[in-house]
Amino acid sequence: MTNFELIQKFSGVDCVELLARALSGESLGLNEGVELLKSNDLNLMGAAADALRKQSAGDLVTFVVDRNINYTNICSSKCKFCAFYREPGAEDAYVLTIEEIVSKIDEAVRLGATQILIQGGLNPEISIEYYEEMLRTVKNRFNVQMHAFSPPEIVHISKLYGAGIKETISRLHDAGLDSIPGGGAEILDDRVRGYVSPNKIGWKQWRDVMLAAHSLDIPTTATMVFGHVETLEERIKHIIRIREMQEKYHGFTAFIPWSFQSENTQLSGASTGVDYLKMVAVSRILLNGYIRNIQASWVTQGLSVAQIALVFGANDLGGTMIEENVVRAAGVAFHSKNIEDFIHIAKKLGRPVAKRDTLYNVLDRF
Ligand code: SF4
Image 1 (tube, protein in one colour):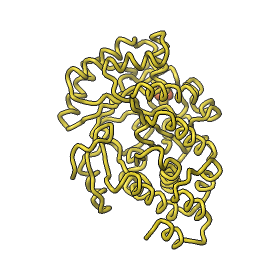
Image 2: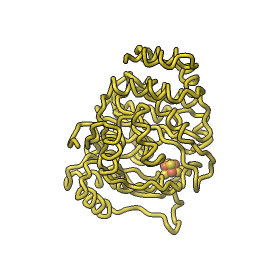
Image 3: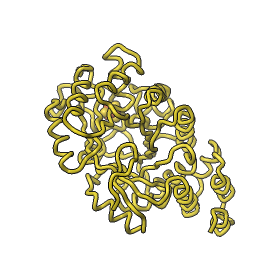
Image 4: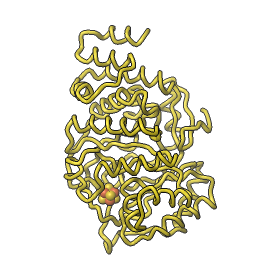
């Protein structure tokens, strides 16, 4: 059945024309994206996103074996949606030593990890030498990809170092930084950011870090945290801004929409499974032709919803996340997964599945 026949089969519902245009290769804009989010034609949207996923990423479901290490929880940003940060001097405030980080990576490598995701708070007491020593030590001792320091951290480090963003990224890259995670994007709109994270970088600085990295041939991911104070227009504006950045260097390897987790934070919000699946489908539809990989978030939605996301436009399950403190602090109960869990849910969909590296190169097929 062709894509158009698929659409015609469901004709009579309100987003048919928009989906037909997307399936014919058209890039939908702001108003069209909002219209899709307002629509309740969930099955149809999912079917269209799934067809686009098949065209651009194929049937293979991928995942990476990784460990998430949060080197410090001391942070000057105090974002309202964050349950992880601590004030300096708090009883449970910490900074990991390089040896503690090495020992965690040693454990992860024994479990098959190829990627180490390193993120932490904006701690004014850590010098640039700490970051460089961490990268150098790890790269000298292990064959892992260092996916480290989201844009707010890069800007923070650049201020400590007294250098521009590009120079800071270059210096970290020389020490062993391989790629940059897309954290800190939340919603790329300064009205939303001014409310949820007033002390954090604005959306244009997030963009500047990503474009500086891409111009140096350093790949990054892009994320979105939705389901708090943003409007539907602001969600779509976020995706369109990502799309515009991608036109410049094509440096984003994946887009990762996360639903907001509110427990222990100053904000309320409770994204439903339907809201999440719609967001995954609309991400695939709007980013089609721009970003190949859309990640399903088992961390915030659980494996069952992540499995459904794989037929709503997602093609990747992200990492096994041997350790994840930030989302756990906000009350989410879905902790690290075995690769058998990922293989099981993909195979139950009749899809091939593979372990990949950070750059989406296939390492092992199952
Ligand atoms: S989200 Fe990140 S930047 Fe914001 S308070 Fe938490 S650790 Fe700090």
